[in-house]
Length: 340
Image (cartoon, rainbow, N blue to C red; front, side, top):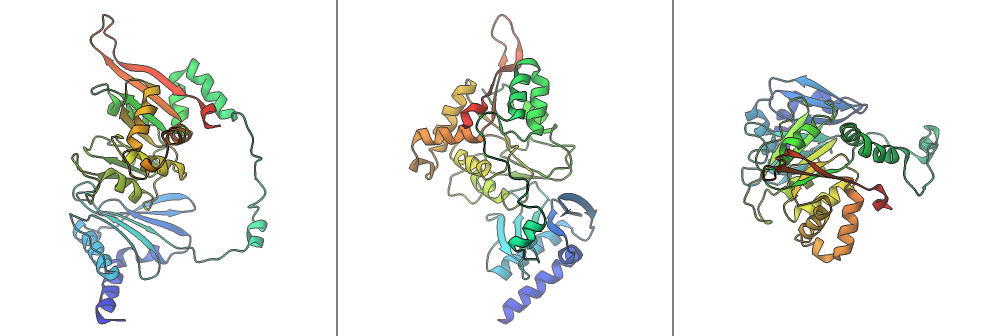
């Protein structure tokens, strides 16, 4: 091992010493730092927060620089996202400004399992004892949601969010999409870990302490170092319970499909569309702006959208008609039969 690598290893170990006890503790699967002075650890599928005053903004930035040097990478304002592996095999994801909120640093560490398991071990733990037969037709909760959609929209929306349905809010400029999106996000259980992706910080989550706000420039090219599509991919290494993408505007729609198809349910996003059904047409066209999306037929992309999007809510701001209804929902699309 070269002297430079030895020095880099020592620097990483020194700078990570404030969280060393959690790196060593058995049973911890994830360590997350969302902002200076605090550490979240996940153990037995529950998150707990600890105050660590030593983790100042400057210290966290030094941690990122040291990991970049150790792995032969770079992290800076122009390349603010770093994926790497620590000396003992832990996977780490760094995000620094301007790709996250000013004066914050996001660090997510996934610890490798120290144990190997055989099929016999899985069998003893009952791993194979609860397999459901694959069945056609609607599930009980889907029938329940269909009934609520017709009888109690308020309760329908609450249960849809709690059931981790993927929701798109469609409408025109000034229709209140973002404000309504904030209201839906407030329903998400407050103990969950949320990650938002937006160009202008408008998704605030005041009652969700375990959160990271990722940011990308409003005017951006696909080749730029920070785009909504690249931040979506970064999310997959940041252990989100829910991903909230402020708006779908272009080729990142294809990445949105992939992320949600990979098992990350409960996403809420928005797009410009004149109706709930036209929302699918718009999203399909935007997905085809992605080079990988262009390789698929339009009908295939449309079918994928029906698979991953559970609910479309169309909103408007009626100030020109004689009724002058103001901001309100005009349509709710929910058709679980489309997933068949």
